[in-house]
Length: 175
Length: 187
Image (cartoon, rainbow over all chains, first blue to last red; front, side, top):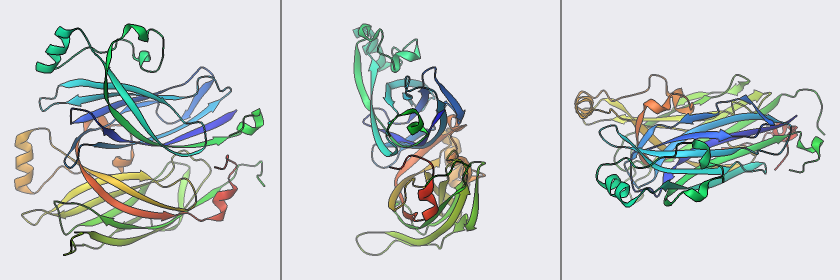
């Protein structure tokens, strides 16, 4: 079986209108992939920037996959939330990006979006907070049923991911 | 060139914690340590260190320079658990107590050669305003009992952190020839 190591950090996020952000991340793979070591999902700490506007998490990612096929190449998905001084959480954006497929270190910038509701919901969100959220998390990384959504842009999640591949040449895959 | 048997590979890290930018604080020292997985072990060098205390330069740069050497070699059979360097910066507060000014962590670079990294630092923050005032007054800020938690992903959801932008800059060189014989796809 071929093996893939995904090692890196979720560095932080920029461009969000809210400060005090945290991120729930996960990785989705196809049926042929098996996670040998590492945790498949996690949540960062809440970060409040003191200088500048970028929130830094430096959240480590270390995953070791074994795979029998290329289908379902891993995708990282994120939910960025903001937390206010009362401890309430509000969605700031959803985003996903594919894990790179060439070995080496990559800087990734993943754009995010959030669902807009009706004008009433948007008004309520501006005053009271809250706002619509996805019922099913897999819409973040899948294209099916997206046509039903009306969304607005959020900020960008920055990652630095390094990839190590092993035994791909045995299966005739050039890397 | 590559052998079929499970191979031990070496990772040699040479470098320094060069300097930091902390606009609000002065007279800082830093500690570094390495966090790595179960398949890794240090074979040479020091995996922890404490630097000197440095003050800001008087010129326009306002630089805090440590130039603190890092010299360690790891051996492993598995890239999982790739070492991370964890930096903690401490300094005196208004009352003279030693308080933490920032924690940061980054993976050791993955490719041989010269790398420069700037690490953002963050401090844990109390969630209640009263506790924030009390901790400022008493000089007992929220601090990690073991800075190595900064390099771990689990359990972070219960923390709040303020981030200062930069940070420690450090340079790392990994020229060990044994690293190039890994049975992994080269870049």
